[in-house]
Image 1: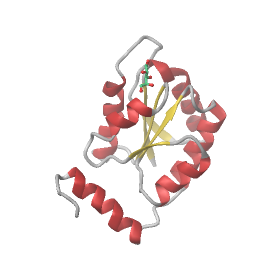
Image 2: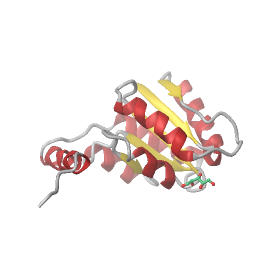
Image 3: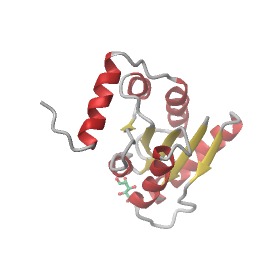
Image 4: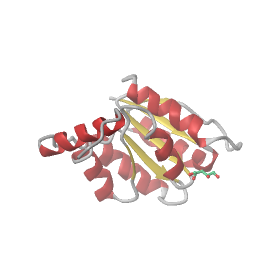
Length: 150
Ligand code: RB5
């Protein structure tokens, strides 16, 4: 499994802490920036990691900003990406099981580094359930493709 990692300046420390965690676990990742606490625009970095997931260069993405909100909005604009802001263990598990989320978004001012690592572990180890959820996820793709649902 290869992971795509990105953040803005507001979550630089959280991203570095997650990187350390992934390295300790022997997991492969690409760091799409940013690379310091200098102020940057979160859509740029969210886009880089989200595109790597959409292009199947990476299997799953981990993208952080101060709140997790801005990066999730940016990532969800990329076709093929289902990004979810997660703040607890249940959300990290359920968004994989039911939504087949391929990007987890977290906020440095929202989750502790320890919780973020736990959420990452849950997110990357939980499988999509498929079944009725597959139909619903396919409907998300239909919306993405401009189809009007009735
Ligand atoms: C940056 O100040 C902040 O707006 C950003 O990190 C993010 O939380 C946006 O949603």
